[in-house]
Image 1: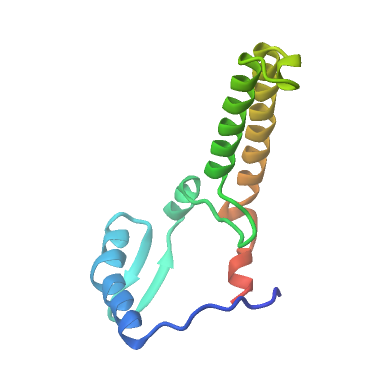
Image 2 (image 1 turned 180 degrees about the horizontal axis):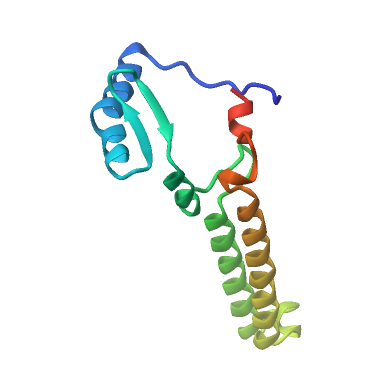
Length: 137
């Protein structure tokens, strides 16, 4: 089990707001959509098999990681700068023609995409008995 992360305490009114929102809106909607089974009287919520189909929309980011979207934006920005500098003849970037930088960047995106795919596949709910974030609580 990992070390418990410090989380700021919620006030009673913040907890009540979240509880009310879940009870009155979110959980009934998720129940209607077949994602969870929500028994309002017993206060029990259970995931259905349909919930695993939503994995594709989830991106779990560790405290020290960055989201993949930021990673790809960063590569795009760096790539645009490199190609721009090479096109303007700025040394040492001009030593490699813009087409060379473009091939390099396509390779970088290809390797990144494969890595992203393989890592995301390992994060699916059915890939582990207990998600890592549940162990930390």
